[in-house]
Length: 637
Image (cartoon, rainbow, N blue to C red; front, side, top):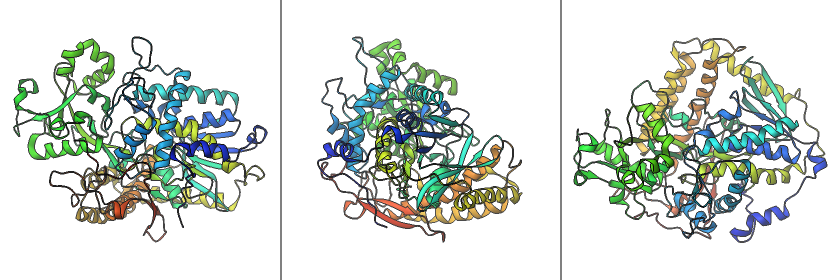
């Protein structure tokens, strides 16, 4: 199959307007005859459900939480980017587009990135209209700050709660449509399979997580907005319930997965403190605006940080990257921290952290000034660690965070399955090999609010004369039977090893072999280890409880089953990409001073993997062209 990205003709700055002017439309009278399923109700899915409901479509929205307000979108604290140039510091749409393509190490699609930057301007106005309480300057203008990889201030923020406040705005818009009867909300439901009829996505199989009932739902189109899958590493910044089940089931029904190994390691997380820890806490990247990162110059220095004088500190980011300093992109900051920790300069009880120091900023702005910008983050740090970041530096460490890989989508955000769309973090489209901070909330919002309401009409215009398939159709029956069989199989293993034990083991393999750095030998070894772990899982896992009751162990086992298959594909993808780019750092492709070495001649493509039942996935390539940004070696020095 040839991958057609459906990129509109013309200059990059005119592609979206040309698309909007020429795509098919569905008139208001016909929209009420069309059903759309949306799985996931965070910023991308909730925004899409609200926008499509407002247009008049019949929307069925599903989430496995007890409320859309529990979506992981709430955890993105630092801010959302927009090229509004309120600071008059030289920002504009092209500069944001350029920063994002460069930040992604030239492995993203230009047309999608430009559209995201273009729509960022309208997004802020939409959010303000929803009542999102963005920070304001004294004169009333919205405040901005910087994130990594840029030299302008384009990040809008609501103290350290931006994701939460944006999600509340989305939830308000969604609730309005639920009240109006245009969105039917299915809480505590998890998608277990995708139903394909005549080559088109026509429904899903879902499990009611309270009763355990397997249910069937039909629609004219299916939209997945289920977030990222970095919880596959077990220890990550993601919420415990985050998973890959929906996209993996879609993959097994024909949707390609693109660049699955591209995982962002976030440099400002709280370090692991024990073996039985279940997740890691993210401290916002915004802290790097005013905090300075350093380690003791002397390896193994046991003194308290405040007892170490300036000339015995190594501000290694400022030393190595003077142009960007502490605001280098996340992939570079994470690798630099790992290099210092591995060299024996790590701090904290496990020697696995570096310092993030606000001493100088406190002198400049005072305690109240810093509290106004980051107060809730400092409070959170104190509650978790028992330490006061106003009086001594925070301890931070790199941790698995955002998945840049996801379902392959074209310009319309449609996957390789007709009628199946993927929004937000569960698609691959906008970030390349490394995501710039504050672009996550942006992509989720513009995908949901602005892009899908337009592009899905181009597909649904041809669906208006087609009846919904019956949920008694053979395709629904087969998918429902497969879901029930998978549950029975897990319950019948009756082994002796808990589900979490497999998840921890899988996470350790991935972190060591397919995490912050990779090698061919390590990846080959990981594939063997994952295969053995998967076989052991099906022989020895213990899933307690039954299928027709609330059963958290069963939910976890189903998700781990999918993770064990996805993990092998991640390693195969990383092994096949014989270069270093962004977050994909191969130890066999680096400069003498540890910088990534890209190979544009052979790997300037999107790797889209097709599932095959024999277990050997097929690689398809979407070659990337760069007409508006020149391919150059990425430098932040």
